[in-house]
Length: 371
Image 1 (spheres, helix red, strand yellow):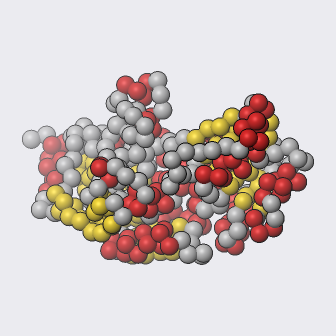
Image 2 (cartoon, helix red, strand yellow):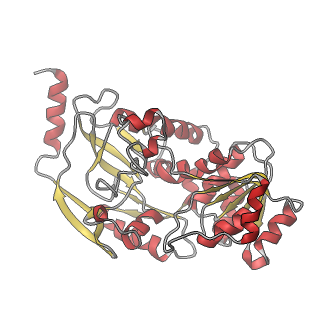
Image 3 (cartoon, helix red, strand yellow):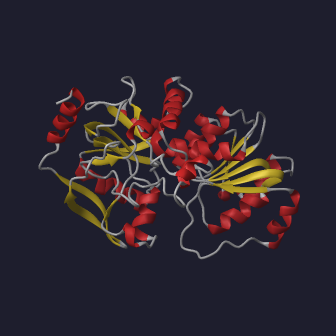
């Protein structure tokens, strides 16, 4: 027997007899604990035991708002750092015992669509987000990661797992806003909503060289952190008409880039009005509960001003994670500042998830540590 096959056999013995236990959607609108057979590790895959996981607003949407047969009896979660306990025979760059950062977007990287499209959608819309949609997610004792060599990144020894788990979704998603908007040196950026994604959009805009960064939000801890991440101005609906405030701050021109990270269907209309002629509106927000988006005539007429509307699912994969890890290691951004609630033990994921449902005023981001 080869050395590689011995390693594979030994790793398989580590989970022999275990069952998959996780927290997820039992049926639409009903969440709870479930048990299933342990995941099978393919030749290119690994099985990971989580050491840090975090719930997300998307988990709440999946549980209570979205309707799809593949979401039923599905373990939730897509933000995870863990330790490899089993590896497939074709995995070359990672070993059993490695601690790894797992992006929320994990495509197979083998679909032909990747050659001429976005990896997030290779094979269909949003198919790169397989955790908690097409496959069981990370709120579990065992997690299977497809295409391990292409999707995983090593957790640096000097980086806390709770810091790294903020990279897996919040940081990559927030940074994608200014990327899509093409933020340039000196641009004015307005960020609608300064929850964790919005805060990372502020930080990403600052790193890309934005000049004035206007953050829209009211929660004191979020406002404070937005300023730490680079916001120069804060706009609140409590201080009057939001659009008027943005126009006053931009010489009645609007922002070069507007990034929507919160709000509802009406926010798009407002954000488009706040976008400068020739500017770009980027939507990162998941909008649910409506069948259509309606633009006011004034906003629609503004489209003759060469405004661009974009939206996109966050990039994933190994290189993306390694680049964001490098940003954190260099001290450019500390995403762990967003963590407001810490829990320990897999069972406490239920409490952390409920926080995302209730959204108490002091919440930014919860994390569950299992190490």
